[in-house]
Image (cartoon, rainbow, N blue to C red; front, side, top):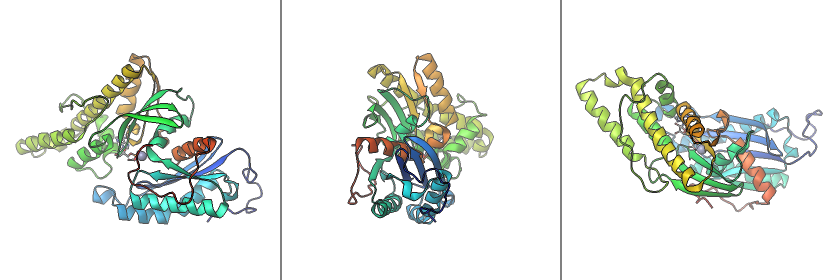
Length: 351
Ligand code: KG4
Ligand code: ZN
């Protein structure tokens, strides 16, 4: 499936021009590959897995099988969209951690094989660091030091970024992630997985102040979302007892109120982090940063507080290999390579 040397006479990237990185992302249920040259993304191709929808969540075994089916054609698409031959690649980057171990292993083994076969450096990338650095893909870019609220299906963190290789977690969830709060609330409402984008869709025409859900009081810059899910569940159970059609009749208002509460919890802590650090270049990242309500409220908060705000393009918010490629590029410049003994890790610590 790969383009081999000499296959296409007019391929622009047959000869080495700048640093070309091929990157693989396979930490959860998206198989993605990207090519970047000197930190410029040339392609970013992602295959989504629809097989999980009917199960209400990602089924790890099905995810790794789908990655095995997808990885060669996805890499092939990324190379051909970048008009790049495999032989022109200078290094291969892959998501090493965190994620589903079976899914990570597919990408890791594939990347190691390429590294071994082409005799090029192997670069192991931390998925959450890559979400943060997705903000450095396009212009305008934040200046260091900047803060980043990273909100995904598995994590909710506030990051202090001092440089491309010096990223510190200064706040994080003590239980569920923001994405889980969206997905679990959506499941209660009867939506298929992942429900976050559906809550976003229905919230657009609802009243965000129609129903009030308690916000947790958590210390420092940390978050908690598990109580919110329980309070939504109890609220709906009580209402449904009196009116079995309560959800159907109030769907847009319920979605808007849930979304409003989650956004409030997130942005209050982000404001606190800015006040504590004095940093005003502020980003958001991760799958939940695709949420239209969060994007709008974040921009509004930025205008009120004189922040410079940054949000990655939509395609770089949810899981994608372009963010692995840009992180791989910075690691390449820092000479931060791995040997073939590196292994995928479901729960790797940040450092
Ligand atoms: O970063 P991501 O693609 O994967 C992980 O690394 O987890 O994030 C996935 C999460 C899911 O919880 C999904 O429901 C949520 O991002 N998400 C959204 C939206 N788009 C994706 N949540 C709310 N509104 C959206 N528009
Ligand atoms: Zn992610």
